[in-house]
Length: 489
Figure 1 (cartoon, rainbow, N blue to C red):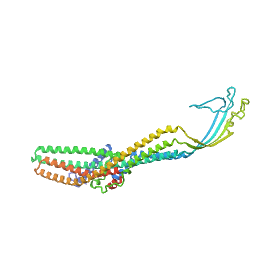
Figure 2 (figure 1 turned 45 degrees about the vertical axis):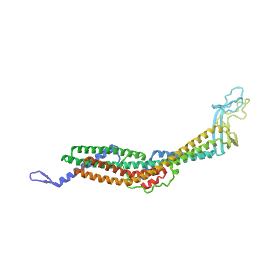
Figure 3 (figure 1 turned 120 degrees about the vertical axis):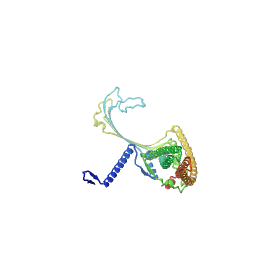
Figure 4 (figure 1 turned 90 degrees about the vertical axis):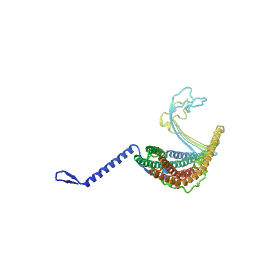
């Protein structure tokens, strides 16, 4: 709104000035926010997103590349099992051959070794003849090994053992991934809490710095107090930088396990204020997915040794052949009648003779026991090695279960002491701060109370996480992941 005054000048209404100032402030604020957003995009940062622990676990299990690879291995083993069952089917071969050539015959022995020969059937001339005609062969053969004395059955069992092993491998990889994600989640949770504690410590140091400066300027405190306060603020800032670096590193580790870009995760902080109620696992160590995987390896190696030992057994087969043959040479093509043939294609490919053969065969490679003996022994040694690894893993998990119970007991005791320590440290800091402002204590005493309060804040934050980490360790050792995730939900 504008007003015209008598001397020709324009007067501005006071309310207009207020609106104009407000508009300028809003414009400056929008420009600042836009610049910060552009800087965040340029730095590759992503907006913060809330991430609950169960959601993080499921995301990591579904998207982690090694788990997807093991799923593919399992599908491959299942396909090989179906292929092993197909070995029961007979072999049926159909062939069609059409050729053009000569049929010179000659008496004499011949043994083809590693080279192709010409199967020509014809009369023997006193000299070479170049008479040529078309010929054709049509054949259908079937071979069915109806009884293998368990050889095919053992190969099918081996394929099933491979499926069982790959399935157990996938299960234990998913279990381990759940534990890893949960551990990284707890680590990031405590790292973020440390960062908040660092900010609080810096705020206290800056508040003391302002108090010291005011009292130093008035001559109530010596100048050395100001130097000590400045040093404490710098130390708090350096500590905050280290805590921020640690938080970024742990955040990156969690993002890698989730197979997502690193971003600002907002975690479920309620875990820092509650403790688990159920501490007993409902699964024995023998049912741990890691133990079951090693057991599946033993079964697969044992089955491979059984396949090797049964591969020396004989086989009984049914076979049959039906054959039709055509030739451009007449039945009476001889040296006496050398012109009894036709070079026309139709005369050569038209079948004129038919034969069939059907029978049963029993075959056994008598040298195979010698060849396969060491292979079977090798598989037995492999199974024995897997058994030793199985026993080692089982003992380690049993020891880890004992350690988890001990850490749980210690963590619950710390959980009871941490609040008392924090309350005492907070009261001591408040008292020292009041005393220092009134000149009744030194800045060294005040800084010592600050250290104690900062340590108490950290201990209180760590106390809850230590209990959850101990419970996670017990879940990992026992194989009962629901013991952890159901209570951390």
